[in-house]
Image 1 (cartoon, rainbow, N blue to C red):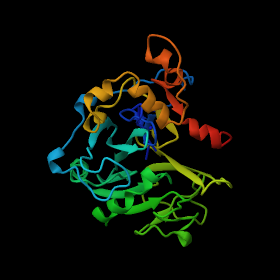
Image 2 (image 1 turned 135 degrees about the horizontal axis):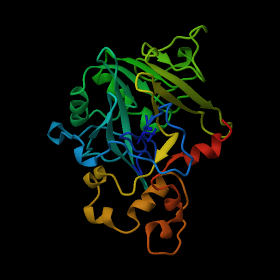
Image 3 (image 1 turned 90 degrees about the vertical axis):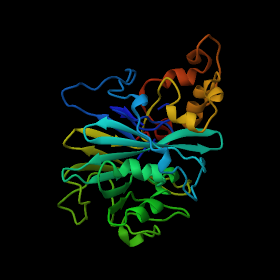
Image 4 (image 1 turned 120 degrees about the vertical axis):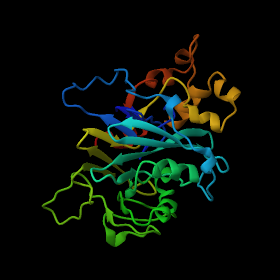
Length: 325
């Protein structure tokens, strides 16, 4: 996990999420306002992070920052930051650290009309994460929005914490952490699943089960079969009808001007301030080459970073393999 942009479920510069309080990069969730009265801006337009203020992030470290086992670091002190996005929406953010890639991964939470919570792309349920979530209301619905490992793997642990919530997943899940084809007949995720999101646009006239939240949140699911890949690629985009807000995961990326505050919970402050730390983190997270140039600014020294910084863009890797979709 988002265009009111706040970083995926699928994901700040190396934050993947949305503009009304989300950042994207590397697989986080994004939140985008799609007010019909505002014309679509050109791809080169600067994004406006409406209402985003990192200093107002809610935390609860004394509730506990440990969960075992997680797929990737942080292992001991896994911090969670909660951002209020407005429009009855929030983002819960954790860090993803893998080899030379560091990014934020976000859960997008929407409060439904009955007061229950719709949780898109849940992350590892540490005490802090669950406390920040429970303060918002009762978890009623859980969604796995894509088949990227960082967004699907924590769901098993999360479902155990919230066993009464409905669980819907995107098709095309594969690998050791659960499999699912295009329907429930092929679903074996290791936890209860109530339904599989339909590919493309859902139809109430077709013989397809729709989620209980489909009257409030519309959806479109991209499914791309790659013959030479280990499995397909899938991601669902959602539209919260009441607020006219688009929610994505890895399909949209926003790159802020500096590392998000949560980076300081894992990295030494001197390391985060080191020249090149943030540009290199961004480029590695979006799979762009570390090509260097000359000049006094980061934009000059890292032209790839300069081309995407401060902009909402379609994820480069998505353009590479699914550009025609």
